[in-house]
Image (cartoon, rainbow, N blue to C red; front, side, top):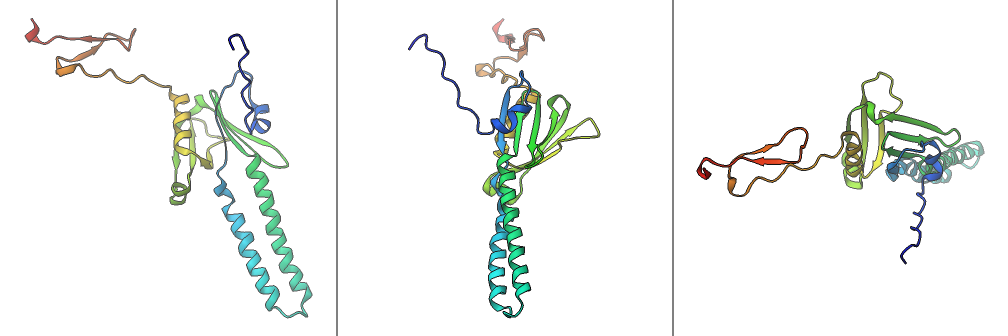
Length: 208
């Protein structure tokens, strides 16, 4: 109905982890958790470790209780490591604003690495074969300074879209060039730096 207040936008799922690190005048361009591929190795370790532990527990002599206990303690350590990695994945966020890029990370001690967009001189990303198959990439940020708190960010989802969104903030969006005149009737010239979108058509000699 006319005059009703605009609906309040739904809170972002990562607000509780990164909003406290943003300045009041910053606008979030993108915020993403790291890709779930980061958990492949610890999950694989737990599954393979369980199979190996069961085989050893079955084939080792029963008169070696300390060996059996050591096997299961080793698997328990791998399982706890998986739990830690899951919590770490859930709480780590890569954030791009209109002023900087940030990476918030850490389970027991929260840390923030950041780089202002004004200092970014080059940005590229790499995608391995597995990254192309399941949709993640690695960003590499270059700056003019020697010490960089944030240079490489791995396991980022939507790398193509994220790369474009951040590049638009760094370099800005330029309007597309005007289309050529129909029939190729003469060259097209820009009118000058004061109005970069205006064009002037130069008539052909046949028009005289």
